Image (cartoon, rainbow, N blue to C red; front, side, top):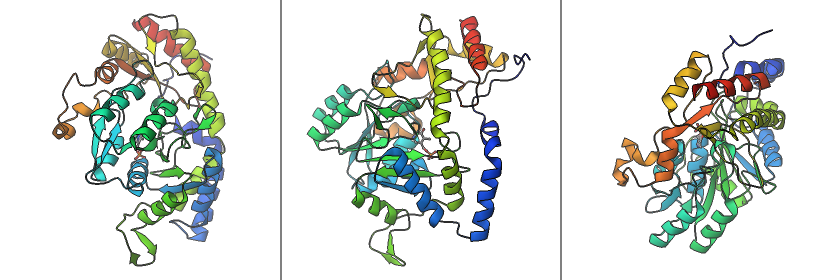
Length: 372
Ligand SMILES: *Cc1c(COP(=O)(O)O)cnc(C)c1O
């Protein structure tokens, strides 16, 4: 059968969940019978399973990836008067988490090939000002150069918190994203590689003191009921999300492998094209392939032509954070981060998800090449 009239979706959660539907419904029914909706055994069970998966000692489930970042920073003493380095080419949540602790974000430019934090830029910044923490972003599912970043952080007294919201299951030199810094933040927003049936996130860490502190912070700062030595927030993981996540976690590796097959088709096709450059992979990595991003000269035209062929694309992210109006007070200007700006101007995210077929990827490749 010819599927060329079918749209190539950017993401297809309907198909992803279809084979799991009975299991998910049974688990929701169990939750209703149990009537434990926030915290409880289902949450503990998921936290344990996720720790085992990442290879860390503790997972603390929270309300979102944004909260995971914020609470991880707070639990490490980041707040008013502190500075936190990150990259400008990320989802705004990375910077929001920093400012919402009261700290000030300091941007550093990226490596133009990988689109990840350039450790040399971080080191340069650290010579010019005190930086208290750094949040490398494992953008598109590829880990930042954590050995270099950890080395610089160690020399300069910075805490390292990974933004692993796009990197569930990715590895760096054989170690999982989420186990490479002091703590890491995951998002389980439905469109991520491991997604809940709503909003959810988690912090992973090997440090019991940090995990204990986040358990208190996520629950209004309570160490015991109505005892508040510190002020926290309401960011507990709910049991329905934990149940959803426990079921889906068992499929994560297979889904990521499927994403890698699609990415391999794209890589093979674009390697020989001089007008398309795919984001490069650093050695010793297995990416989670959350997004597949290429850089093309006339992006609007390419996107338009793909859309006419019913191929859905997206932009991650078209305006770097240092140029966002809400951060104008930070005093950055156009030209401050040329690599991040260049990437933002030419990037295009192609469809990639576990339900995609090789023939879909081939259709996307043909459409991109025709558009050029
Ligand atoms: C999705 C995402 C977040 C935020 O996660 P939420 O669960 O949506 O709050 C943070 N950082 C990056 C890089 C993301 O992609």
